[in-house]
Amino acid sequence: MKYIKSALPFILGVPAGYILTLKVFSEIIPVLFGTMGIVYPLVLYSTLFFTILFFIVILQRMINGKISRLLFICLMLTYFIILLASLFGRHAYESFLVFDPLTGFSDALSDREMLLQSVLNILIFIPAGYFFKGRSIPVTLSTGAGISLILEAVQYIFKLGFFDTFDCMLYIAGICIGRYVFRKIPLRSKKL
Image 1 (cartoon, rainbow, N blue to C red):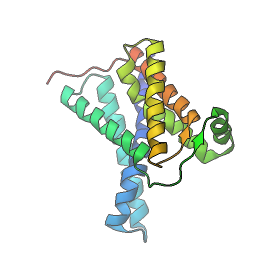
Image 2 (image 1 turned 120 degrees about the horizontal axis):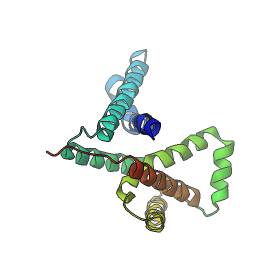
Image 3 (image 1 turned 135 degrees about the vertical axis):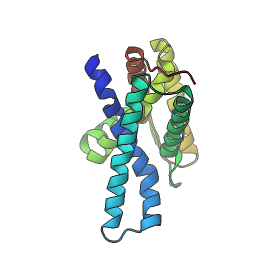
């Protein structure tokens, strides 16, 4: 358990920093600095490094109980904003339904980009498992399934993606992993 507690900030911090850089900073940096020359990659990779470092430090402080309750609330709000931006911050395009989860699974096995997307879908929902740490497994699974279905339905209705049952399963897996992790490693915060 000691190794998991030590590795958790890296396991969650690296994808969190990557997603934030990919979804937010990679859109802002070209506007501010352009894309010509060495400045763009230098700023982009520096931003990626410092964003990952920020998440690792914050997660280490959270696990060791050295974070205020106010900062914890701000971090959770930031997490949900990033989650919603990554799920719904896309341009509208054609939407369709994929009911067979084996289609998504075979796509993930055959395409490297789809595999990365699948892993990120799991990782981005691990922090949501914090809210299920005191719940039973059936409650976690049923609530996770309901949340997943709603998210996928919204993406489908507003043509921000497609309804994919495999994605629903990945979201549920992330929530369940988070539930397990936060039951084993409770986050503590200092009083304000």
